[in-house]
Image (tube, rainbow, N blue to C red; front, side):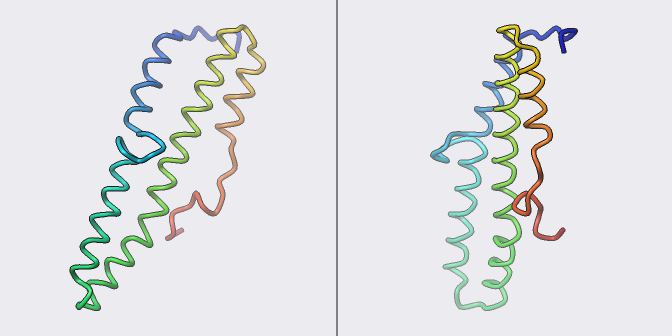
Length: 120
């Protein structure tokens, strides 16, 4: 790792940009906000189609399939950003061993049942 030459300002800029695309914890912007908007729209469509069993079933199946995938995208992106930021901070302070551990911990994070799409 000591052979790395990281442009920390560039890393911070990229992290800031990606965090902006990911959104905030309130789900008011970015990907997290788009997911909330999708959920609201689909629930509205389900209400409008409540009289149609096939359409209601299809909407329910859609949400059952895609809701976990959307959550996974946010969780895994957030984890990757955290790992990169943590590793970069250790690199800046010269603690290359901790930087390697921080990077490895997020890259080697176990994939849980919640991380798998429902069809696998």
